[in-house]
Image 1 (cartoon, rainbow, N blue to C red):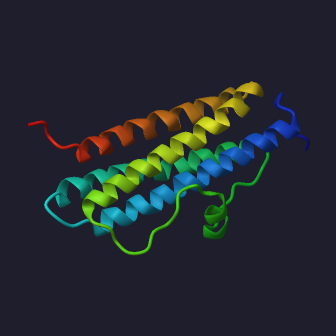
Image 2: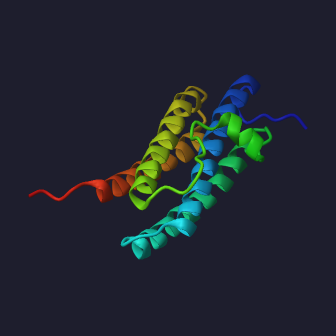
Length: 159
């Protein structure tokens, strides 16, 4: 059955392609955060282990919402490591970094998710795609807040 939700097919495709990049970034960041949860060591272990679990749980829920929005626009969501590797602006890393580097890498990852979401927002706005705009706004809000909290852990106390 043909879809008629008030957004022309070409615009739906463009938004879905942008959301696919966001899905790839979010899934890659989810995987990285989950790995850090398993592998963090050092004096901040307990706090970081718990914080990373909270973060990867939120990211895991987000990938489902993003994928379902892509489907609601009439397109298939990418769902393989190969597809995510091609679409994501977040690169995988070899080895296990130290806790401070993990935090810095996650800051960069959340900033990348924010930039990707922001790049899709204008497409959704021009198509009057309010559900996608809402999803993108939520993703930017969560990623910006998470990056701020992580960045705060890297700051040295004044004195």
